[in-house]
Length: 478
Image 1 (cartoon, rainbow, N blue to C red):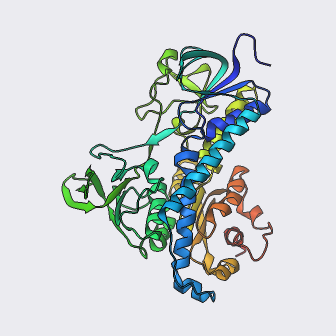
Image 2: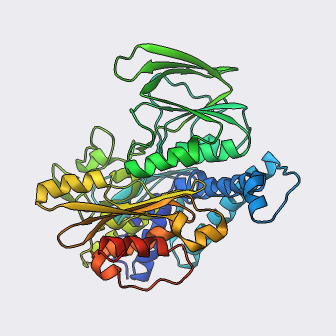
Image 3: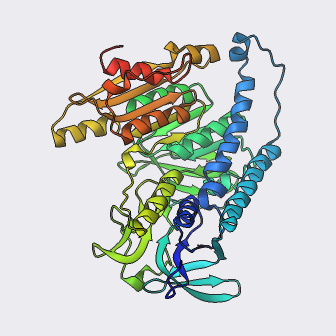
């Protein structure tokens, strides 16, 4: 029962995946809960990220597969011609977004969560003001969770018009298929959009400021991804260069500069430009100053391991933050895990999120997934803590199911401690990598060793045997 001193036990600012997960868990814990949202229910993931992008990737992937005559011929299949309608593909994504947004809203309503539409901000200890269409209202809550999410980051010198130069927020609408698209950034967003655009017939130039493509990915995986996902497709790459200036129009003019010297090295004229340079926290105008909280220089809300908001290094009583705004892991499922953990902490059951065991994936064709540490990061940790690291690789070309599917490109890489055998990281590129990674994620979560994993039984023939073989090799049984 809600304390008589407050309107709610818990008020959540932001109805993305993190806020939604926190609200559902709060209700199951008996907390009277309100959720405040200024824009669309579901936040970035449902409306402008995970969900619509996967719908586009699903459609584009089928076009790519049906146009791969050699692959189909090897399976005994002949397809005369493949046509697609851009508008219908775009509508497919939009309809899924609408359905899931409705499902999310209805799930909250069914459980008795009060949904308040408006801009919520902290107005002092255990108090929020909400700017709604009908005016400002104030509510009180024993605990408050901030889940404001993130927005695309646009570097200086790049001008956005939403039509010829745009971020993923507009790209997800697939309003056009420009003949020549420049993509600035080769992370998850850039890779997935290159997969969609190239499958649907666009020529692509991928621009990366760092010396190598796919920064942040394990180097072995990145090299294979370049061979599979970029080289055979109509994609040219430019690395070590900055898109120093981007001017919208017809054509779009992109001034490229050397990333080190900042000297102009080339000027491109393309039909469109997608800016996929990452995301920044959406933490302005949250009223944090009313409780003495300052964001860091990048705009992230400081939190401790329990996700309590910090002021001068000390927890602010009854104020919490989750999701992209914390800067821990900018992933929807990480935000949901944080939301659940925070509710547990509010209820007095201490819980800390294990970020090493949270997997990530790029839903390209084939997919890329990973969990835990890269080999480089694991070796750095080993130097600090005094242990040696080893890695093994297994190949989809030796997997019976992958061979039967005619999709045998890819590897699985397991990084582990030599002394204890503990799995530190797993990286996969190949068919259904995003599904396979969860076995490794669970193994890391309970700190299993390759010696114990090597004796587990996997169904045959399945793709999961790629990991089974990796564990056996690591344990010396390969």
